[in-house]
Amino acid sequence: CDVDVRHGNGPHPWQSNAHVHCVRFLKQNDLLIARDRGSDQILTYQVDREKRRLLLLHTYHCAPGTGPRYAVEHPFENYVFVVNELIPYVDTYAVDYLSGEIRHVRREALLPNNYQEDDKAEAHAFGSYPSDISIHPNGNYLYVGMRGANTISVFSLDLEQGMMKRVQTVKSGGINPR
Image (cartoon, rainbow, N blue to C red; front, side, top):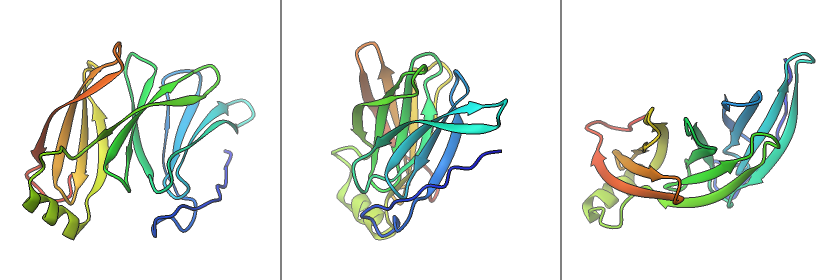
């Protein structure tokens, strides 16, 4: 087993040090993708199973104060969707599975422009932070939970056109959906 100790921080009070929040395997070439919420980075690693080592392939520097949290990979296309914990947005990244490089494609807001003012006040009072992200097995829909606002946003995906379109944002029916 290998370990990569991360260093760094970000401008948000929750970012006093590096904090790799989540690591998962991608679907090809023994690649790992890690999101460092503390230093606003997304990292890809090659896993050398024989030597039991991690080789850092690529570091993507997100906008300061973003706090990348969870990611989900498209089941058929070369895209990864990352929900940011410190800002209410989901980002789309194109993945090069040979080099491990990721490239930012687009950003989409999680709260719609017509979100009700009383709901915004409730979300602000509690603290509105994106939580988990899931993709439908057919690859056509993305789902993102929002704590504080207590909503789930549904997006349709048209990756041939590079588009993500909000279908709806609904109340979760509970507190702090994960």
